[in-house]
Figure 1 (cartoon, rainbow, N blue to C red):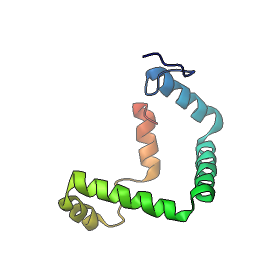
Figure 2: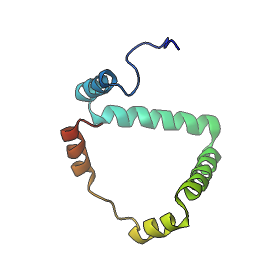
Figure 3: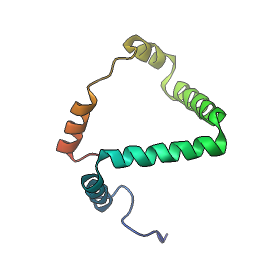
Length: 98
């Protein structure tokens, strides 16, 4: 099947390199800004109820896939993060992940 899209195949090394180049050129704030803009657009078009609906669907899917024991496990963790965001970013830079 022919891919009529411009640019490298999504998920390929070339695509990853392109994403890293954009990150180096524009910085993390660029991604925060475009994410915020997209979120605001969705909120305007679909309304806040949309987020409740997709959250419910995601929760049902997670329950189906992971089982109720999963919720017990994450409930015990509470709001504790696995590691600080700065540490995660440093680890991603070392492994080449974005």
